[in-house]
Amino acid sequence: MPRLAFLPPTEKRNFDSPPILTKEQRPAYFVATEDIRKTLSSLRTVTNKVGFLLQLGYFKHSGKFFVPASYRGRDINYVKRLLNITEDIDLDEYPPARMVQHRFRILALMDWTSFDKSNAILLAERVQLLTQQQLKIEQVFSAAVDFCWKHRIEIPSYHQLSVVITDSFNIVESELLSNLRSALHTPDLRIRRIDFYLPRSGETAIGGDETAQSILAGP
Image (tube, rainbow, N blue to C red; front, side, top):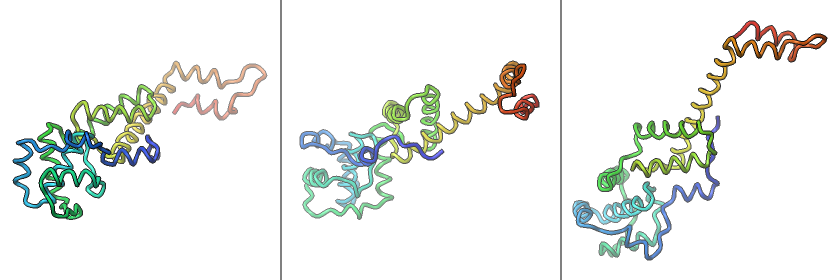
Protein backbone atom coordinates (compact mmCIF):
# COMPACT_ATOMS: atom_id res chain seq x y z
CA MET A 1 0.00 0.00 0.00
CA PRO A 2 1.38 3.48 -0.86
CA ARG A 3 1.90 5.83 2.04
CA LEU A 4 -1.39 7.27 3.22
CA ALA A 5 -2.07 11.02 2.99
CA PHE A 6 -3.61 12.57 6.09
CA LEU A 7 -3.33 16.31 5.50
CA PRO A 8 -3.57 18.55 2.44
CA PRO A 9 -0.21 19.99 1.28
CA THR A 10 -0.59 23.33 3.07
CA GLU A 11 -1.47 21.74 6.42
CA LYS A 12 1.35 19.23 5.96
CA ARG A 13 3.87 22.10 5.57
CA ASN A 14 2.38 23.87 8.59
CA PHE A 15 2.67 20.70 10.67
CA ASP A 16 6.42 20.56 10.03
CA SER A 17 6.95 24.32 10.46
CA PRO A 18 7.45 26.35 13.66
CA PRO A 19 4.33 28.04 14.99
CA ILE A 20 3.60 31.65 14.08
CA LEU A 21 3.68 33.36 17.46
CA THR A 22 2.14 36.71 18.23
CA LYS A 23 3.92 39.52 20.03
CA GLU A 24 1.97 38.62 23.17
CA GLN A 25 2.83 34.90 22.95
CA ARG A 26 6.60 35.18 22.61
CA PRO A 27 7.31 36.09 26.26
CA ALA A 28 5.38 32.98 27.36
CA TYR A 29 7.39 30.57 25.24
CA PHE A 30 10.82 32.22 25.03
CA VAL A 31 11.64 32.74 28.68
CA ALA A 32 14.93 32.24 30.50
CA THR A 33 14.22 30.76 33.94
CA GLU A 34 17.00 30.08 36.42
CA ASP A 35 17.42 26.48 35.21
CA ILE A 36 17.50 27.59 31.60
CA ARG A 37 20.01 30.34 32.32
CA LYS A 38 22.30 27.74 33.89
CA THR A 39 22.16 25.76 30.66
CA LEU A 40 22.69 28.89 28.55
CA SER A 41 25.72 29.91 30.59
CA SER A 42 27.37 26.58 29.75
CA LEU A 43 27.02 27.17 26.01
CA ARG A 44 30.03 28.69 24.34
CA THR A 45 28.69 30.50 21.29
CA VAL A 46 25.84 32.95 20.88
CA THR A 47 24.53 30.80 18.01
CA ASN A 48 24.17 27.86 20.37
CA LYS A 49 22.45 30.03 22.99
CA VAL A 50 19.93 31.41 20.52
CA GLY A 51 19.41 28.01 18.92
CA PHE A 52 18.78 26.36 22.27
CA LEU A 53 16.21 28.91 23.43
CA LEU A 54 14.41 28.86 20.08
CA GLN A 55 14.19 25.06 20.17
CA LEU A 56 12.89 25.19 23.73
CA GLY A 57 10.25 27.79 22.95
CA TYR A 58 8.97 25.99 19.88
CA PHE A 59 8.87 22.71 21.78
CA LYS A 60 6.84 24.26 24.59
CA HIS A 61 4.27 25.33 22.02
CA SER A 62 4.20 22.34 19.68
CA GLY A 63 5.72 19.37 21.48
CA LYS A 64 8.13 18.85 18.59
CA PHE A 65 11.37 20.07 17.06
CA PHE A 66 11.99 21.86 13.78
CA VAL A 67 14.97 22.40 11.47
CA PRO A 68 16.86 25.68 12.11
CA ALA A 69 16.35 26.84 8.52
CA SER A 70 12.63 27.16 9.29
CA TYR A 71 13.03 29.29 12.46
CA ARG A 72 11.15 32.54 12.15
CA GLY A 73 13.03 35.82 11.86
CA ARG A 74 10.93 37.68 14.41
CA ASP A 75 11.48 34.92 16.95
CA ILE A 76 15.24 35.00 16.33
CA ASN A 77 15.33 38.75 16.86
CA TYR A 78 13.22 38.49 20.01
CA VAL A 79 15.52 35.86 21.54
CA LYS A 80 18.59 37.91 20.64
CA ARG A 81 17.16 40.92 22.47
CA LEU A 82 16.18 38.72 25.43
CA LEU A 83 19.77 37.47 25.72
CA ASN A 84 21.30 40.89 25.00
CA ILE A 85 22.99 39.65 21.85
CA THR A 86 23.75 42.37 19.32
CA GLU A 87 25.90 40.51 16.82
CA ASP A 88 24.51 38.77 13.74
CA ILE A 89 23.41 35.16 14.11
CA ASP A 90 23.74 32.56 11.36
CA LEU A 91 21.83 29.45 12.34
CA ASP A 92 23.53 27.54 9.52
CA GLU A 93 26.43 27.52 11.99
CA TYR A 94 24.32 25.76 14.63
CA PRO A 95 26.14 22.39 14.66
CA PRO A 96 23.78 19.42 14.08
CA ALA A 97 25.44 17.37 16.84
CA ARG A 98 25.05 20.25 19.30
CA MET A 99 21.46 20.75 18.21
CA VAL A 100 20.67 17.10 19.00
CA GLN A 101 22.34 17.43 22.42
CA HIS A 102 20.17 20.46 23.11
CA ARG A 103 17.05 18.50 22.19
CA PHE A 104 17.83 15.84 24.77
CA ARG A 105 18.42 18.57 27.35
CA ILE A 106 15.06 20.15 26.47
CA LEU A 107 13.27 16.81 26.76
CA ALA A 108 14.79 16.35 30.21
CA LEU A 109 13.78 19.87 31.28
CA MET A 110 10.23 19.32 30.04
CA ASP A 111 10.00 15.76 31.38
CA TRP A 112 9.21 14.33 27.93
CA THR A 113 10.75 11.40 26.06
CA SER A 114 12.13 11.31 22.53
CA PHE A 115 10.38 9.63 19.64
CA ASP A 116 12.69 6.62 19.72
CA LYS A 117 12.15 3.02 18.64
CA SER A 118 10.30 1.99 21.80
CA ASN A 119 7.92 4.96 21.58
CA ALA A 120 7.38 4.32 17.86
CA ILE A 121 6.29 0.77 18.72
CA LEU A 122 4.02 2.09 21.47
CA LEU A 123 2.42 4.55 19.05
CA ALA A 124 2.04 1.86 16.37
CA GLU A 125 0.19 -0.39 18.82
CA ARG A 126 -2.19 2.45 19.63
CA VAL A 127 -2.73 3.24 15.95
CA GLN A 128 -3.50 -0.41 15.20
CA LEU A 129 -6.23 -0.37 17.87
CA LEU A 130 -7.67 2.81 16.35
CA THR A 131 -7.53 1.32 12.88
CA GLN A 132 -9.56 -1.68 14.02
CA GLN A 133 -12.29 0.78 15.01
CA GLN A 134 -12.52 1.80 11.34
CA LEU A 135 -11.90 5.48 12.00
CA LYS A 136 -11.15 7.82 9.13
CA ILE A 137 -7.45 8.24 8.46
CA GLU A 138 -7.64 11.94 9.41
CA GLN A 139 -9.07 10.93 12.80
CA VAL A 140 -6.33 8.36 13.27
CA PHE A 141 -3.67 10.98 12.49
CA SER A 142 -5.16 13.44 14.98
CA ALA A 143 -5.51 10.71 17.63
CA ALA A 144 -1.85 9.73 17.13
CA VAL A 145 -0.73 13.30 17.79
CA ASP A 146 -3.00 13.48 20.86
CA PHE A 147 -1.51 10.21 22.11
CA CYS A 148 1.99 11.70 21.96
CA TRP A 149 0.84 14.81 23.86
CA LYS A 150 -0.90 12.74 26.54
CA HIS A 151 2.10 10.48 27.06
CA ARG A 152 4.64 13.32 26.76
CA ILE A 153 6.32 11.77 23.74
CA GLU A 154 8.10 14.06 21.29
CA ILE A 155 5.72 14.53 18.36
CA PRO A 156 7.44 13.20 15.24
CA SER A 157 7.50 14.75 11.79
CA TYR A 158 4.68 14.28 9.31
CA HIS A 159 6.82 11.77 7.40
CA GLN A 160 7.54 9.70 10.52
CA LEU A 161 3.88 9.68 11.51
CA SER A 162 2.77 8.71 8.01
CA VAL A 163 5.17 5.74 8.03
CA VAL A 164 3.95 4.51 11.43
CA ILE A 165 0.26 4.89 10.51
CA THR A 166 0.58 3.40 7.00
CA ASP A 167 2.50 0.40 8.35
CA SER A 168 -0.14 -0.03 11.07
CA PHE A 169 -2.93 0.06 8.50
CA ASN A 170 -1.09 -2.59 6.46
CA ILE A 171 -0.66 -4.84 9.50
CA VAL A 172 -4.33 -4.61 10.46
CA GLU A 173 -5.43 -5.18 6.88
CA SER A 174 -3.19 -8.25 6.56
CA GLU A 175 -4.52 -9.67 9.83
CA LEU A 176 -8.12 -9.11 8.74
CA LEU A 177 -7.53 -10.81 5.40
CA SER A 178 -5.77 -13.72 7.09
CA ASN A 179 -8.61 -14.14 9.59
CA LEU A 180 -11.17 -13.94 6.79
CA ARG A 181 -9.40 -16.62 4.79
CA SER A 182 -9.24 -18.85 7.84
CA ALA A 183 -12.90 -18.27 8.61
CA LEU A 184 -13.99 -18.98 5.04
CA HIS A 185 -12.26 -22.35 5.16
CA THR A 186 -13.88 -23.57 8.36
CA PRO A 187 -16.31 -26.48 7.66
CA ASP A 188 -19.48 -24.49 8.42
CA LEU A 189 -18.66 -21.58 6.18
CA ARG A 190 -17.29 -23.80 3.43
CA ILE A 191 -20.63 -25.60 3.26
CA ARG A 192 -22.43 -22.27 2.90
CA ARG A 193 -20.05 -21.19 0.17
CA ILE A 194 -20.47 -24.48 -1.64
CA ASP A 195 -24.28 -24.20 -1.44
CA PHE A 196 -24.01 -20.72 -2.93
CA TYR A 197 -21.82 -21.80 -5.81
CA LEU A 198 -23.46 -25.16 -6.61
CA PRO A 199 -26.24 -24.94 -9.21
CA ARG A 200 -29.86 -25.56 -8.46
CA SER A 201 -31.85 -27.76 -10.77
CA GLY A 202 -31.50 -26.49 -14.33
CA GLU A 203 -28.94 -23.78 -13.40
CA THR A 204 -25.24 -23.35 -14.02
CA ALA A 205 -22.89 -22.92 -11.06
CA ILE A 206 -21.89 -19.30 -10.32
CA GLY A 207 -18.37 -18.88 -11.64
CA GLY A 208 -18.65 -22.15 -13.53
CA ASP A 209 -17.98 -25.73 -12.47
CA GLU A 210 -14.27 -25.05 -11.93
CA THR A 211 -15.01 -22.52 -9.18
CA ALA A 212 -17.29 -24.91 -7.34
CA GLN A 213 -14.74 -27.71 -7.62
CA SER A 214 -11.95 -25.49 -6.29
CA ILE A 215 -14.04 -24.60 -3.25
CA LEU A 216 -14.84 -28.25 -2.65
CA ALA A 217 -11.14 -29.00 -2.81
CA GLY A 218 -10.41 -26.41 -0.10
CA PRO A 219 -7.31 -24.22 0.14
